[in-house]
Length: 549
Image (cartoon, rainbow, N blue to C red; front, side, top):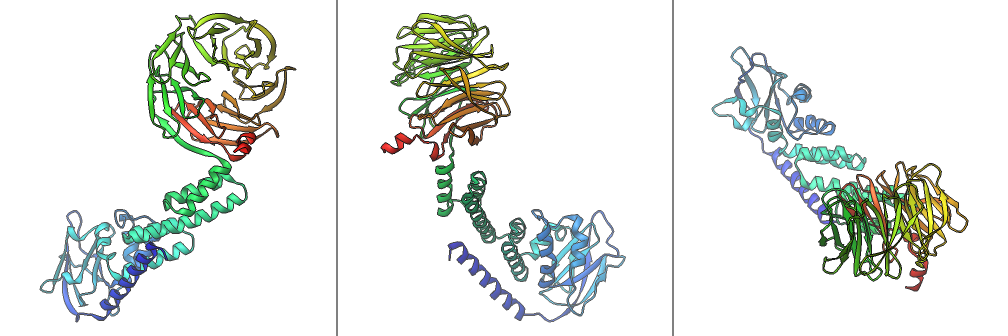
């Protein structure tokens, strides 16, 4: 038996024992003159009843079952509550005379006097009688006062406790919680939470067996909220995380929209950039901000790590590229104004070159470490939105608002092939790990897989409800990831051509997504001002890397 259950049983026994004692000790009957007072109403002809604890219990329980009583019995329910009160045996309902008084006979100390005219409710314990008189004024009126007086009575508490347990057994947890709140019992409320958590957990486990992971995750999270830190719930949540993935942590600190995100090669850090004109380095495990890189005079549009992780590159709407030392945050080099907004940047696999895309319809190749311009790739007829290096460093893939993708020979600066994307702007591109395929996202909400040798679309993935802003491959090339202005991140199974998983959590457009070096996690940025880390479902993790472990 749990500690909560032991406490609950103890309280129940004490209440029952106390109730028995109360029933055995009775005062002799007597006659009392009752007077009612109210500032804003006549008290003439007000019905008055003598009741006991049982009568109060039978009237309070149905009321507490049907509505919450945080501030007592509501005025709209005064009449119904008073009507439900059954007078003690041998007494009748009295009525106040023209002086607001009534004589009550056969009154015992354990009785209660209740008066009600529809607008006011008076309640007092008969034990308050002095010299055979009892005056009920403002301090004895109101729905809150009525509960203050009656709810603490053992018979009422026993009835509320029994009603709470009955509601729990019937799975009516909201009702049980209302009754427990009326009883003002934290023990009862804890029992309701525990019981509901148990029921939610059972439903979550059933959903898990049916592979309905979204439902299982939602129910298990609710169970953890109702009754936190229960081992069985934590175990199920961890199982869901492994099989289905989910949000691990949220980084907040950027001021304004976050437009771009990248993982460091060792997976220990995440770099983001945004409209606040800064880059922020985060500890990927703790979510703590490590340092900030300042220098841009416009929004940061794209960031990338060098292959060795020692440098970072950024492009900005201020028309410059900047190279940074990651360890110190110092700026190493910056280009002069290029005259056009920089939209995308990337490092070559050997770390000797970087490429940039811009609104001038061109892609430029730069030599490190001094950021010297080598050549420009010209061929797009509208702004270039995205650029990526092939895994071997020999080719570059670009996407443009001229509705095309282009494959370039980096050494020659020549266009190898052009891919027409219908009438939709290409917003983002990525190379597959083997360099044979390209991935694109576009303003028409579609994600497309291209055969780079033939120039044909191999697969098209439809599911986003808004333009796609970022795409990436998992490290063994079996899955693709896309981020959209609809606030979601989707994982696509390239083998089946079907959507495998959708991550929801961002409250605005998702602007960028990056896969961690071990292939287990994702980092995403959003115009909601946050960077989030997600765990990918276990089936998505790279097969070869997992096999080596």
